Structure formats: C-alpha cells, structure tokens
Length: 222
Image 1: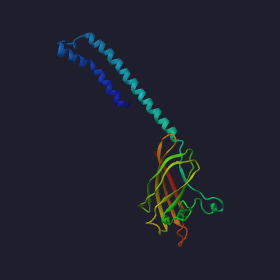
Image 2: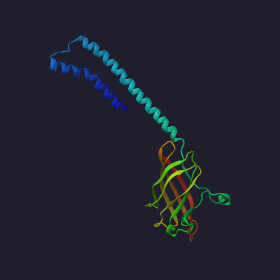
Image 3: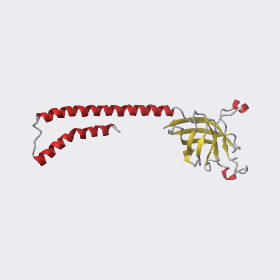
Image 4: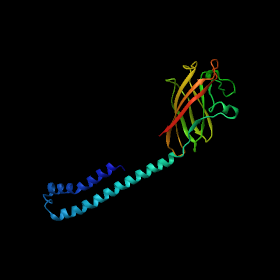
C-alpha cells in the first residue's frame, strides 16, 4: 500500500462520524454537534485513528526500505559480458580477440556466404551468475542502426557467445565505431541492460577478415 493511500483512508475514517451526524440530523432531526459526550468520544477516536495512520505509514516506509535493500542485494550477483581476450603468444600484441568479419559456418560446417559481411563480436560471461532471456535491444555501427539477431534463453558463467551485427553499409570502412546494448535478467529475476562501446580498426589495408579493438567500454543499468 502507498503512503497516499494510507493517508486518504485515514481521512475517510476520521470523517465517518460526521457522516453519521449528518444522517441523524437529516432523517431523525437530532443535533449531536452540541453534545459534549460526542466530542469527548470523538477526540479519543481521532487519537486512535491518527496513531493507526502513523503506524501504517511507518510500516510502508519500512517495507520500501527493505525492498530497496533486497533489490540491491540481488543486483550484486549478476552475469555480465566482457570482450573475449587473446591467449598465448597473441596476448603479447593485443588484449582482445579481433572482431570477426564473415567466416561463419552453417549447420553442415560449411562457410555461410550469406553472412560474409556480418561482424562477429565474441563476448564472455565473466560475472557471478548466469544470464536469462538474453536479447540484443539496439545496435549502431558508425552512427547507423543495424540488426543484431539474438535471442538466447540461458548463458552460463564463463560461456562464450558471438553476437553477429549486420554490417552491409560499413563493410569497406577502415574504422568502426560500434555501439550496442543487450537486455537480460539474473537468476533472481532482476532485469538489466549492458551497453558496449567499441572502436576498431581494420587489421590491414587489404584485409576484410578482422578488425582490431582499439578501445572498449561497457556499462550496466537497471
């Protein structure tokens, strides 16, 4: 119950005796306003109702504080993404795995040529919880909106996922400024979004296979 509902209910209870007085005067011709016993009783009634209103408001405040604290506790255990990092000798030259262009395989293990211009971004769940109902909510490459077909029921801790961004318009660009957001929820049902900002540069003038990550930033909101 909201505080305003408690106050409104209390006011209605406080004016009920006056409604009764009005009924008595209109239908029975009795004037109770000048009766001292009524006012003594009403003052006691007023005090009791007022204390009840204050008590209910305090209960509402306590519940809101407890709910906020509980939500804060639930938010502390989240799954969240980081860019997949390089390993082995490649780690000496760059921190993150390059962004993949094309080279996607179909279910038969063959090169899926319909995705030759798609941009693949490998992310890893580095958080403390699994992710549920993962969906890409928006994406841009060099300021233009692009599609990110993605809908995954569960992503477990340390699991790697490749997000494919349609990159038809910027396929020949030397540099890419990528922004995209993913919505998901944790095992406690808290829904949140993670936003990514990536700046990448083509590995060489002639190569269309990979883009090297120059800058990476991410944030989470609820």
